[in-house]
Image (tube, rainbow, N blue to C red; front, side, top):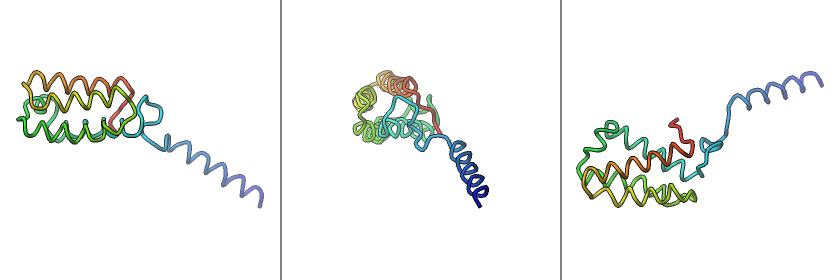
Length: 118
């Protein structure tokens, strides 16, 4: 009976270690909401058709993109993500080059803090 218990416990330990982190933000320099903001950013970029297509979005669509991302970023305790969310929101209504700078800043902050899209 004891042998069966030890074998089951060992199998459970192996299964748990294979699962990796319980949360995708573990092992990064992001908190939960910072990770969600980066994920929202990556998802919005994909939805828009990639980086170049995102840069060319009209101001109304940029605003929707920026609001989605900045809502999560605003809840983050990672200051640079929170600040980048504000920059993204402020640049959404500006010139295309300004919007690109806001997007590049946000992307860099996510990548520098270890974000990898799942």
